[in-house]
Length: 275
Image (tube, rainbow, N blue to C red):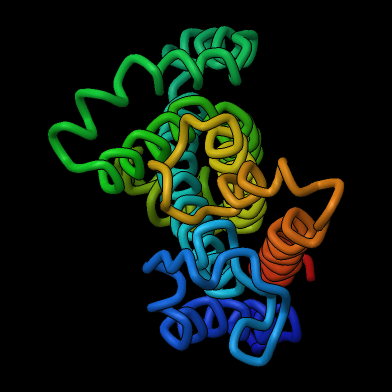
């Protein structure tokens, strides 16, 4: 296994640094409406211009990237946690395997977008009342993403666990009397990192798409909170007159997903013993 920094990892680091470091430069313009500055063209003070409330569009774009990436990371973490747990149990236990796989098939057969919309509409009010608008929306969105996206990861991890369970080092550990949970943690999971990284990469991209979809439909973060999906929704009335309002968040979204996927492939190759 080699973890030398690659160009993909450098690109990922630069992207994260840019999203974290750049927004404070324009923070006042991003959060404070000023109607005297509404709908300004691009200038040195406002490189992408301002929106209908006088807020700096570049600042909101970078803050929206932050929110979308954080939501994607949290949704990916929950997806991978659930998928790895189900896949590991199914692969290690012949008794649980049929039941867990039928549950996975059932979840895969459900229409995910209507299910997500239904859950968000049912629990948005109680969670935001208990945790606040932004935190409640974040918890709800990441939970919904995790609960509706773990199935592909579970199938991939189960297949890898079944493959590794038949290998000599795993059989040797079992013959020595090593408990099954230690076999799973010490021998199977470390050797399943390559498909796990692949699952995490795909899960993060899917989580960002799901969050953007919910925000675009008006069921994501509260109004005024910039995420890439809500910025696309705000740009709808200006598609004919100022398409850059939609192109900018769309391009940033595509760039983030591309870099994350590139970095995930680089990590997968580093963890793959055959590389």
